[in-house]
Length: 128
Image 1 (cartoon, rainbow, N blue to C red):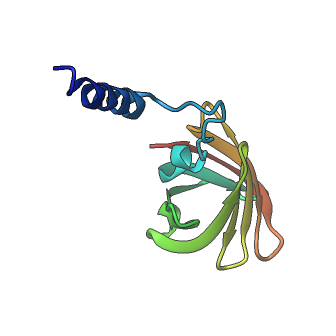
Image 2: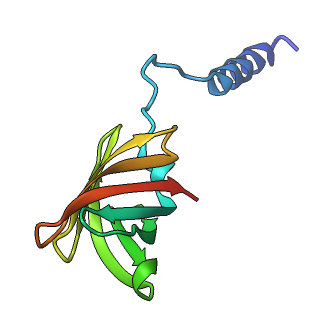
């Protein structure tokens, strides 16, 4: 038994070392993208137009998106986005831009529309 004691102690030490959870005090921050990637529904209101336009928006993990304009036969408008912890900026391929702020724990977003031909307005959306 005494001959095996050093081996047994080495195995126990290795087991303890491997089972310990290393905590360096600097946890990896969570990318907020994990909260807002997915399907959204909303309305865009262009100034001077009587009725808001309904849309569905699909935000992909690769910083691309697709707006499905429900007011005009589900026409699709692709684009790209950038984001910070509290904002989302969308640039559509047609030149339209949205500048939005997140709220409600990344389940809502609202902001302004800057149309490709100078139109302005507002946009509001919620995560599905």
